[in-house]
Amino acid sequence: MKFKEFFETCGINKTKLAADLELNLNTIYGYMSGKWKPSQEAAERIEKYTGGRVTVMEMRGKDDRRTVNSASS
Image 1 (cartoon, rainbow, N blue to C red):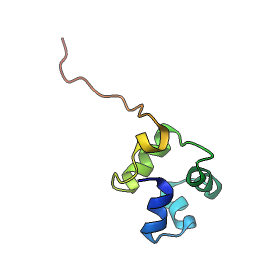
Image 2: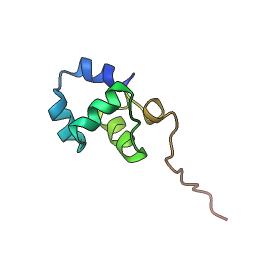
Image 3: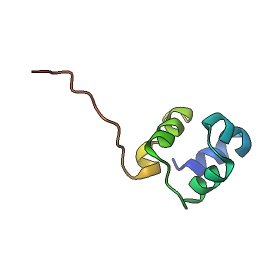
Image 4: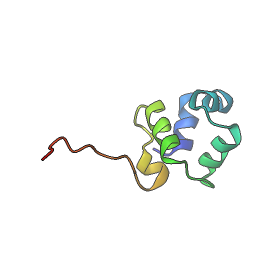
């Protein structure tokens, strides 16, 4: 799901969304319009906020989270 689609269906106003995500309102507009891509950190916050309905991959085209290899030699 695109970030803009999530916003349009969630019933939250943009000011509250920006405050909840700790982002500037203009930044929210930029992400929704597709003009800007969020940083990895912002995309992870958006993914968590949306319960995984909007993913880092959808927002950035990549996911730079590091995976921890539990097998150590």
